[in-house]
Amino acid sequence: MDGQHIEEVTLQKANFIGIGAQKCASTWLYGALAQFPDVYVSDRKEVDFFSYFYDHGYEWYERHFAEGAQRRFRGEVSPSYFISSDAPQRAHLYNRDLLILVTLRDPVERAYSNHLHEVRAGHLSGANLVFETAIENNPLYLNQGRYAHHLQRWFATFPREQIHVTFQEDVKADSLAQTRRLAAFMGTREPEQFVRRSANESVDYKNRAVGMMLWRLGKRARKAGLGAVVEQVKTLPGIRQMRSANQKSLRDATAPMRPETEAALVRSFEEDVRALESLLGTQVPWKRFRAS
Image 1: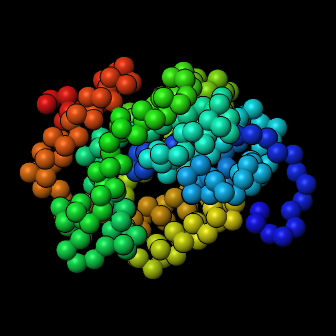
Image 2: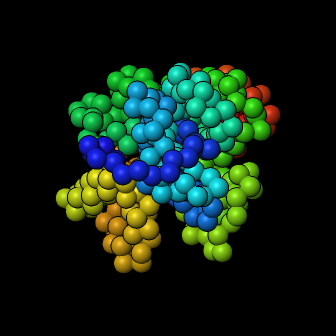
């Protein structure tokens, strides 16, 4: 895609984007979209065009969907769009008819999952391995969970009927129902048989050398435009069993969130959650905020 010689292909506009938020079932969204027969989702999961690579131009962007030019729907999933102040207007300028697919999660859980992600990636050491310290080290732990603050930019830019919101908690409860709900929103045909996909949990590896090797291979393959192939390989029985046997929950290896921290985060997010419910016109499924 980035070589000097690029063959002539038919390019079509993307007509949907998944915008996150981060650590809120965006991988489930990507996998669900890939199952719809008249949907083409980019092999590179996070294209990040409207956030990081806008200077590459529309042709560069649309080459990510060239193989799906004849499909009814074409698009991609980039959680970086959710908090980008520029992404809504850039996306609207590109295609005012874009369908905007949003995934959200209890912001307290999202912040801790963000921490587990950083631990697994090796970005933290020493005192910052403790969640309470890491919050001070990384302001995005909290900022990315202020959903109403960020989402209002998208609602101000696109019509409400073009925005679809899925809660990760609903995916965990019944991923098949949420996949069908997504299909109904888009008006796309359902596949003859769904592969049930749950929302990912942060994991580490029992054999870290093997686990990291497979993770890096998958990351390189996605960057090379083989994301759909990676997702298919992961569902093969032997591969799935091998990956599962080598995984352990990072929650078992990382100090849990302290009760007083949880209470403080609930208070911190409370106003934004109420604003989110007003924005969406529905109650969120997060029990800790209902109880308060």
